[in-house]
Image 1 (cartoon, rainbow, N blue to C red):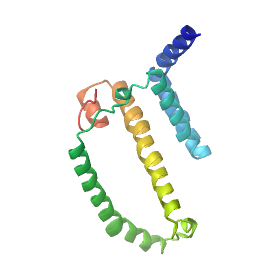
Image 2: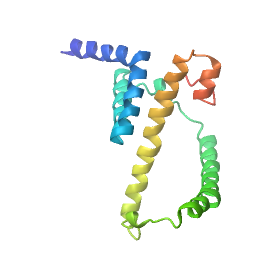
Image 3: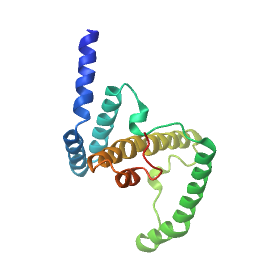
Length: 165
């Protein structure tokens, strides 16, 4: 049984490592997203986590390394301030000029309910942050860099700070 599982994992690792598999997964995911909404994103989650399982949960394969925490926190603070300024002073006024007042009635269940607010924030961090980093930066951009020639230019496109591994 153990040998069969090992052989299966090696086969999955071999298949998910192929460029053709990557291209097909991206195309099918895009088509699913166009015609079936979030099904394409769910498909990419499945591909990424299957690849991660096949790689024996080696997070380095996806470019995840130990960060320099002081620099990371400082950058996150600067980006947060930048995003708030950009949204509050540029994007939201433009949206209100073109589309009128923003209707937030669909999320009125959050107003005055701290528990719902915390749940939505945590889900946003998990799905909007961590999972998208794994899919798009850790998987898609890394595979594209490798497919496009594994040169310094392609890695700079995928990882502005340089080759992760």
